[in-house]
Length: 327
Image 1 (cartoon, rainbow, N blue to C red):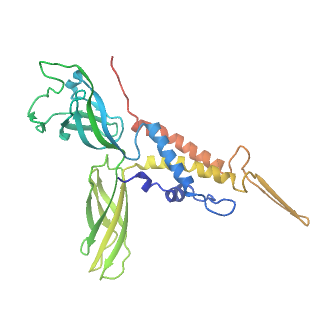
Image 2: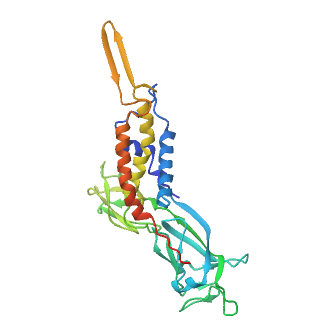
Image 3: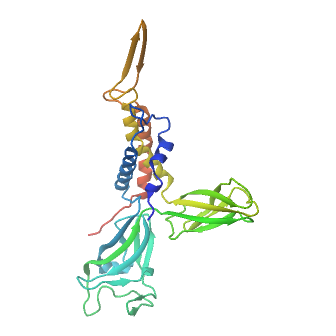
């Protein structure tokens, strides 16, 4: 399974959010990569808890939900614990310690992947040896044993988180485009595609790029920046990330603060706010904004903090779901 950490790497953080920051120790050596990795992972975990979503993909098996008969009239609405929903692989019903009975996956209607909302709507697909062609199935007991409530009756296995896929396509001379189809539909078309083009063949050396267009939740089209020479073939390796740009921006702003806080303390050396040198009547002094209570990159950190703070309400509005209960 692909991971968001294949994309949000220490190099990504340095190139996008730490440009101009001296990321070296007093001896001139680079900061350890673990510093950046820890900052990125901590930021992802924080935003996952803050927004109630899974940013990196996670596989859930046998998540149990109670069976409540009154919900039958609403086609058994469920709000899965992890969201957004990427794919659902299995649904079972199980009465106590009896063997579970597998429900057809076709019964599961994903009403809102972002909010984890699903319903069970029976179709002609069979449940064991019993087939429903119309109406609502009696999956809460028969007329001889009507049941209003069964704890842990339904369980679901699924993958939650934003989509990540990689692949390779080839384009021969005479064509400039190739269609790509995802193995599983993404939540929406708000994903980014990063293509890398390699040209080979008897037509001579060529340097081409590729761009993604016609994006849908099920795939996109790759288009070369120019025509291939006769005899050449373009191999395009691509990575698609379903994590929206605003969410990646929030992760980057938060992740950058730890390296900047460390770098601010080391601008003039660990714990040094000013340096003065005097020799033969010549004086030289360097003063920094670093102090016992202030980081040398404090102004930039404050700017990042304000930007992050302004983004969070919009992210909460987009991803936070409202739960209602009636007693």
